[in-house]
Image (cartoon, rainbow, N blue to C red; front, side):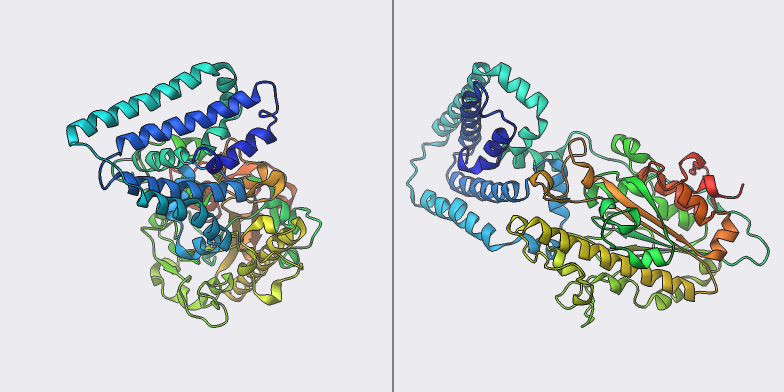
Length: 523
């Protein structure tokens, strides 16, 4: 476990130049010894009859699985990654279950576990065993402490300057991450705090139509791969034809769905959300308090991460449409299908005041990018069809990902076309992705790195706006004005207030200075 199971750690030490530096070999040996001694100490506490062998087998499986993913995708394992794993549904996870993972688990976990199971273990009476276990635990910790003292200066410097290394210490990183996720010191407690209970709709002009906003929550969108943002490939032709405006300098609240979605629908902003001691109602609650009709439509089995718990919602991911759900997972066009019927089922009194539909995409969720697009939208070929992304060339991987953006463009174009058919409303579309993605840059793949060390491609997200002529006229927010502000730096901190502003919701929770549309709006 301490040697081969930490191949990703040794590779990182080498890529940073630490292993080759003077004294690097000693630091590497020290880290290996510390890991072995720490695992020995842990297993000493578990050296009881009917406990020790299962514990060893469980650690071997964790080591093999962790080593595979850290080596293959260059991820690190922290409490956020543990939370993401626990919230991942089967449809998302099965793409990661490759033959290579099976081989690693077989060789690195199943065979060693079988050998361990065959070994005889002499257990003493419980008092003697307890003393022996405690002695083994103390001895393991003493070795860890001695090795730290032996190379304290280079060890402290390395860990201080390269904090990611501590999240590569397998399988201790997994035990720590799961423990932090389940029993972390700072838990969000107490009842949900009310928010925006004073919300009301601003008085509309005589004869004005109600507003219909479709908020598309994108999945794994890279801002730099959108043609609207100057990308060399034309990945967004339908949005360009609709003359949509893209904010080119938008940034995510987190690097994973579990982190970003609750944060972006909060009124607190990223810093306030991370520091909160109690959860509050979300943007959707405030919209509903104002009297608007709200509906969440989800194409991910993983759901809305709690933000839609108190509003009407439907999930399309399990539908059996033969064309749009060919492999048990639905393509994103399923979100647009039947929107008229879904709208008609909302309360009439609320519909008369206005509607907000939230559509949560499957989008560009990896690693099986090729499964997110139908054959007609495989514009860039050849594409990567493997879930083991290092097997693909950079060009193939980029093609597969760009095809998902081109398909998202089509879904957004179809949504705009639908909005244009609803002459009884003034329509608008807002698309914002939850986080970005690494596509092999610096040998990193997927997303979910800690925010402080994550590359910009995991945090820089697209933010696209389309307003109908009637919506522009009624709000005073014009597309030319937005286009002139397209390079303004914005973030998920702005989403809560910007949606309230677009829908003319008056509430004490609203901050005009955080509304990205306020500068173009009528007074």
